Length: 252
Image (cartoon, rainbow, N blue to C red; front, side, top):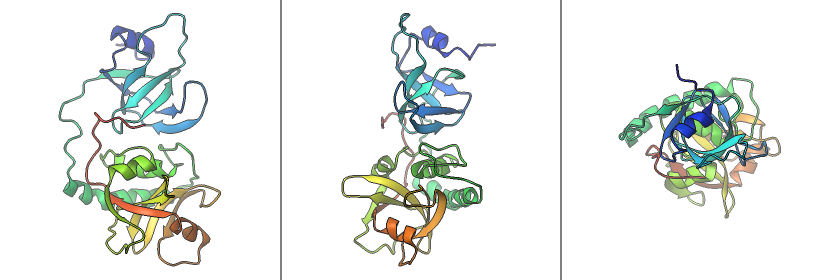
C-alpha cells in the first residue's frame, strides 16, 4: 500500500507539479500565511487541491506548511504538513459541469432544511469555520451548498461577485425567493452573508459584537429587534446561485 503520510515524498515524485491534483484523506485547516495560526477556512476530507508552493524541493528549508489552491472553490490557503494524508487524484474533464440552474433551484429546500438542522445544534460563531457545528457567515452558506454538490466561493465578497445580481436594497425586495443570498457591508466591501428563508426571514451565522454568536434567524422586515435592525442597516444587495464554480478560476 502506498504511504500517504509523507506528502513531501509524494510531491517529489511529481517534481512539485502545479498541475497535478491531490485529494485530502483527512479534515484539515487552512491558514492565512506560512507561520501564524490565523484560521481562514476548514477543509473537508475528500476535497481536492493542487500545490502552489513550494514548486521545488529545497533541502535546506524545513517545510511545515504548503500553499495550496482548492479545486471546489479556487481558494488559496496554507495547510500544515503534520498529520496530512493525501493521494493523487485524476480530475475528469467534465467534472463539476453538470449543475444547471433548474437542478440548483430544486435543491434549495434541502439546503434550507440542512441549515435549519444546524441551528438546532449547540454552536457559536467561528472565524474560518466550515466543518460545523461552528461556522462563520460564509462558511455556513458555502458548506450548505457543498453538502448538496454545488460549489460556490469561500468568502462573502467572493460569493457576491459570483452570484447573479438581483437588486440593491434601495429597491423593493418582493421578488426574493427562498435560497437567494443576502449581502451586507458598506459601500466599499461586502463582509457578511445570509440566505433567505422566505416571509422576510433569513439564516446567518453572526458574531458576538453585533449578532447572536452563532446561527440565527433574523428579519429584513420592520422589527424592534436590535440585531435584525443592525443587519438591515447594512444590507447591500441580493443574489442568486445559478451555477456551480469552475475549478479553472482562481480566487483568493
